[in-house]
Length: 270
Length: 85
Image 1 (cartoon, rainbow over the protein chains, first blue to last red):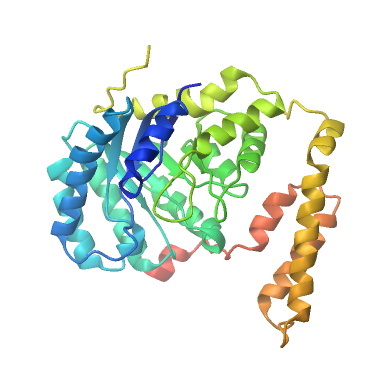
Image 2 (image 1 turned 180 degrees about the horizontal axis):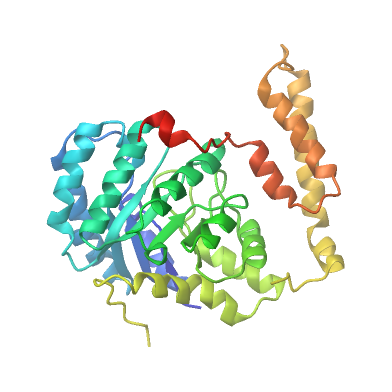
């Protein structure tokens, strides 16, 4: 089965991973901008990172028949540096016309602080001003519920935000339903320790339904499994779910969501 | 939508896995007791005990959701006022 990984950080992965993903059926992916594992020191550091996301990575992916898209922002972990965050937000429009840019992301909260919230709102303004879709990171572990509620507050308080053009990622049992009920798209992240297992993700699909629900690996430089989406496919098959339902979650839904971006020119494989 | 498997099939499929997870949990708690010192006053131990109680409840609400909420920070509706945002 072909699938699309809507959230994966390929700058942290090897070319061998591209080959493995292609062999497992991955034909498309979107890569949100995120934290490098250390705080970057200048706006030029982000400019170089955005060049990597918009120039180098799509070429590397294309060698294996994978169509690569991306999202731009300064992540929540670095948002405590408000001055640098504002410089990055001001610079992002330089890249919005690049052919693989889908929108602003992954913006969100980390420790749910005032500075993070301030920079989240300023990213929101940028997305609205340039009519961009938004991809959102919700916090980990104990901070997830509180942070998700804060993010939903900020999004729904602004009538200019169209929920159908926003994807809220890393939802789990206690956040998925509210995200979906408020009209947003929701992404489940398959992660060995801090997020969702394939079994729990399948449970959430059964409890919430497949409409506007996506699944991703969020593979990055930490403990993560870039081939996690096929694990969910296998789990759903083992439970007896239909191929049509599985395809909806791992292929049709991400393509339907991304198709709202003017730069999304995905070509279905033959 | 419901899970296509019936409860007997789920139990047949997951019994050994559940058994293994309970054993891992038991061994972790044993390890805590064998180690020097005392963590009974550590709030995380209270959360662990509350979590174990949730597993034994016959509740209509999802046990997984209850466990998630137990280990979550509290959300306050007036957070924007507090942050002056």
